[in-house]
Image (cartoon, rainbow, N blue to C red; front, side):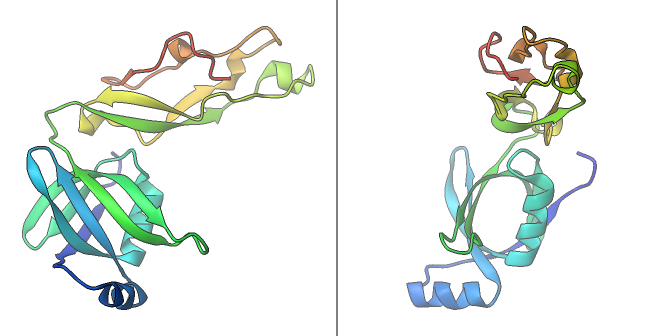
Length: 180
């Protein structure tokens, strides 16, 4: 985690649909923190701050949630988008323990240039866009790079087992699955 991502939350009590709409127009969205063995907790989060952190962290980076003087480590587990304008309507966070492995989906970033595409006129087919990994939260990568330079001919392909992983990260998919 190169830069710490922090979101400040304020407590939320039961509100009516009308109050929820008013709050959203005022620039905050409802959020829930889930954690193992504890009841879910409801909060408000500033829309602009959440949008900025989501762009930087996505759903595969640990962020810090601050509620008053209390801080917790979490990942963004899920979001709800408005069907017409794709603005965030709701966010779910999952509190993580830094000493306990977690499972998360991490996007693949395809880098490099394939000789089969550049010189032979081939077309790159990506069959997998993200992989499920298991690791400690501190080791969770924002993305995993896949080097396309390994594809020299039309018979070549990259499988999950060929992906170079950061230390402490394990992919949970079938090793023989073709990625590109």
